[in-house]
Image (cartoon, rainbow, N blue to C red):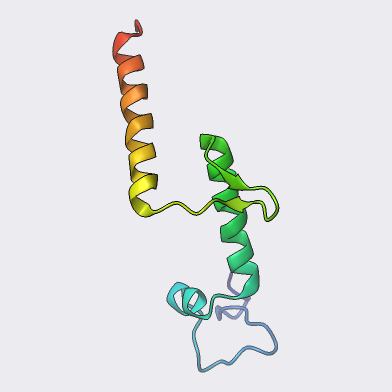
Length: 87
């Protein structure tokens, strides 16, 4: 967002010498961003019917290999179903 002067709007306590970038944001990993990612991860897992740790509402620990295996299985089943379904 730009102010009327054309300069980015900054919070009063921001350090004008440090530009806001996505890299800096992810490196700093503020609590609100971490919570947003956890919430999104849980929503995606719920949408796919994957396990969620109910107490924390977070995705259950799955390895990258397990995640890819589940995605491949889902993709194959959907592509098979769409190949059989009439247009």
